[in-house]
Length: 199
Image 1: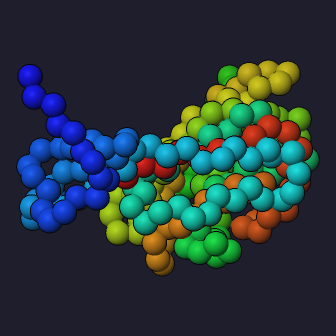
Image 2 (image 1 turned 180 degrees about the vertical axis):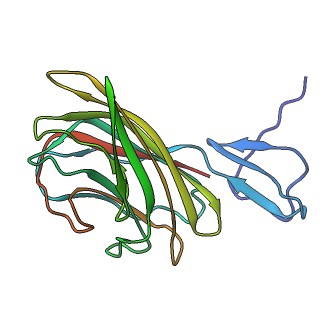
């Protein structure tokens, strides 16, 4: 049995074929035999969604190709749809051009079309949303979304969410709001939100 010992987390020159792991980072080669690095899953810092009108996650690295937005008991003071908006700067969020739909399944199906964000259905101000919506980079700066959540409270109802958006630049941030428009309006009053991102 052979043992490979790495003394540095910097690869010099062209990486050998195959994969090498060091300190949780994965290295290999791309189709052009140049050095490539695939990042491990990175967890953000959970933010209590108990105040304010937006929950923002910034400084998402350019190599991220998959981002999961996680909700745990999230509530606002209004019945407006929750929206996930993608940003191309620390304070620049895209608020138009989304092709998004969200539905609830509670005996009958109710749906909403949302063009100002990736929509997550809400029924009442007492709703608590738990679940996740995952964003996938399909090509260039175009992202698609798919998620399943639950409204918990007096009744437990399933929520589905999906959509897409072509950004004008690379994604660097994600924002969650409650609003009937693309601007933050509703005040968060319960729960927490966090993200995972990976290359």
